[in-house]
Image (cartoon, rainbow, N blue to C red; front, top):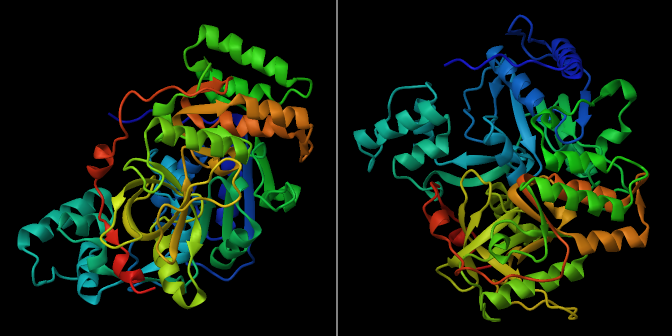
Length: 512
């Protein structure tokens, strides 16, 4: 059955027209479905901003479809042929985190992370022949060790998913078989759509401007600005003529109580106490909002509790580990982690790129699957990554209440560093969404009592807005400092069963 046509609101239609005009100046005509070879031109940037539910994602998805129909090639961070056409037009759809990119992919938009587009994979020459054949650039190759049946499976997979790594995985190849490393992108691209642009910092924005002469930013001005940017977002500095704000809240037509609460925070006269009464009232009549008297520990393994204060985060993490009987000198399979960065010297820049390109960027959510083959290595599942299973040198830090230095149960000498992820700050939760979200309300009350203002709005309101809009289906507003007992042990069976072409990074970092 064909899907009904998308009906835009007036502001969405105007935004679509403005982007269409911008692209027409760059040589891509969406109205007639045609494009001209890229020509030298001045950089063009536009920002489409709006609060949650204003239709930004729908607009992005429809613009992507129109560009693809006009013959623009979508670059997804996957394999790129070296047989490039000089006249090709390209589009990349990017997000700052794996989780944010996966939200778009679930909606049919081929998004990837900014890191993944800044760095491109280097393929083994033998397997590059398979990739070129899959893309229609040559005859079927003969590769020792690969049967005709394996190549047929790869061909069918590529025709369905348009992913070279996924196709090679169906032929029985692992990532480490065909990717020999990663390099900084040398050639510029063309058009870039950036989702969750409120999370961009100045350095990322500068990198993107070097690659894309045409940028369209999609962001939420009510979210929290990146840390150390004085409460400003990159699109705040654009001229008024370069910005358009979407106002109509489309999803409210579906009677979404979570979005109703988020948008109620825009009322300048609303106090924290008034807002809590509103949450309690909504919870009485709609089970999508829950007035929680305790933190549900079963949810913390995959959906962290959102807090404001680090002290609260550390207390909740230690309570989570205690109720699961986790030993102090080891991790249990199924414990959630948050990547806190990569600790490698400059001489190992290639290895840093390897890790980051596989999704181990700062803020990435990870589930610990078990120890690797060597001391200090961990088998990990990177949530939201396209190829989520990684084995990497790890430095795991377990913070303790009232102790300045974290406890390190084990560590490689260098590699990816991790903090525990059963609870995270609301700042780090930006760009992510979960089916169910628990918000630790006592922390927001502390922010309200502190009286802090950020970008002209009480900080507690920005925190509450970001935390609430992380919930897709269910919001639990936790009002007491209590923790439930788990109904069972931590599980990883569902992650081990997830399809993935695992890339072991143990050999890459061996000997550091």
